[in-house]
Image 1 (cartoon, rainbow, N blue to C red):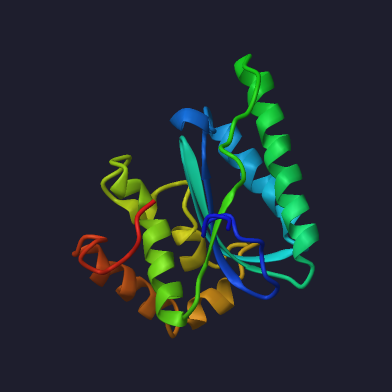
Image 2 (image 1 turned 180 degrees about the vertical axis):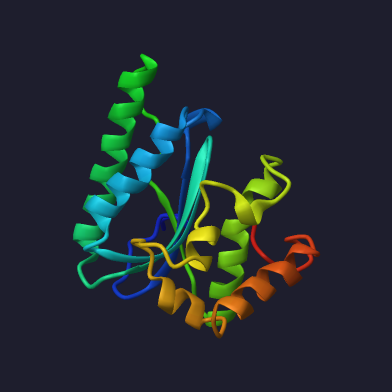
Length: 189
């Protein structure tokens, strides 16, 4: 039986999608790498998944998505997207071979409470990894985009609706930020 993180994607299901660099190596080396990852993600996957949240860390990433109906195509699109990112990083860093551990990991988000906690977990991941002191303003997280009105590929309106709007979304993050992830029962990666 496959690992719980390697189960086939199911249609119309929320997932926490995540992966890291092979042997913990970097998957982003410059701001251009982060920007290109998000741009290519939007281009290659926006027609297949709804994206609600993301966080990109130097050696890994997290996405909160809902699948569409054709999960075989979605899996293939993810594989093409990751392969494309790997080729670009390999070219720019004069490296070869795999960039990501395989296959990409996915964990179904099974209820609304868990969905809300995943937003917090993803947005607070930079603090968890000691990358910054204020994870809510981390440049490569979706938090500020969700709080803004700027154009985005994120499904902002629906994301905020799970909290009752922007103010409640912000309050949820602020309240949980005073507790540790373990105290709130939020999984760790």
